[in-house]
Length: 198
Image (cartoon, rainbow, N blue to C red; front, side, top):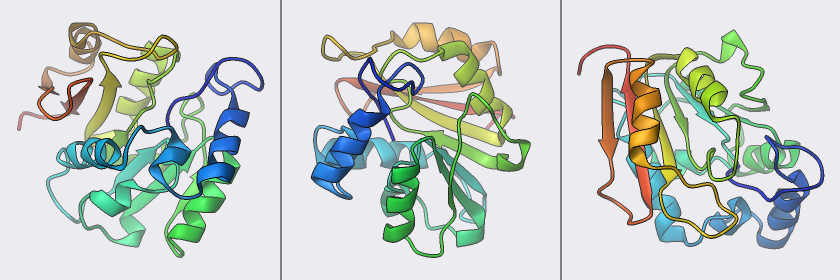
């Protein structure tokens, strides 16, 4: 699940009912996770997937929504993938889309060490005001090799935008091995963080 709106039940300061309504209205499409088009959704997930170097690496997909990362990411085995989302309705819908794959409820603000994976990916997690530093650290804590996270640098009035240099500064506090991607969509950028030099 990606962004959200303010008010109502808390979801990192967002309204979970907003996503319940989108899912009910749009089903298992990009619109259910508040993405403007199928193309932008696909490109974001493809760029996230490029952080992963080996098809046998394990993957933690944070804010997995409907499990769309599996549609556009690298080929991986069921036992090597785990998608977590804070919204149970998204988890249920993901399980219907991808029977036999692993999806479960989870909140990155309460990370479970059992979620640790070679690579952690998160799309749209920072679209609306989160506890940025804590969330960023928790994501990196769970990766064994690296992580990929995307952000908005241009957005609408109620969206949370960040300058690439802001996020890069936070990334360099965690590791010296950081790559910034800003070459795929005009409003987005993605950071790859690695544990070791690539």
